[in-house]
Image (cartoon, rainbow, N blue to C red; front, side, top):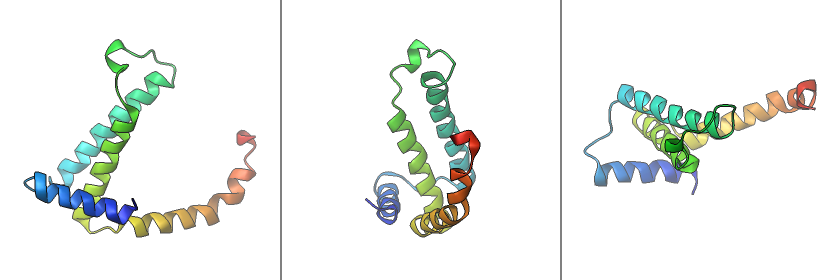
Length: 108
């Protein structure tokens, strides 16, 4: 599935199963909450914090998908073509960062 289709699927889901999009500020708060859930899993599973018993069944993939869903909602409701924007960003990063990362002593 490409990003354009993902945006369309989210829009169709909202129309079929939701009443409407939450407003942009609510979705921003929701995104922050979802990113926090991803951070908690990463910090405890891959970082130095111990993982609580209640966190051991948390699914990182599911939480990342939650982040993606809210990002797609925000893109839809603000008129952003995320596929186009991502393509431009990847091109920019490729041009800007290729040599920078290869020459970074910290990454060797």
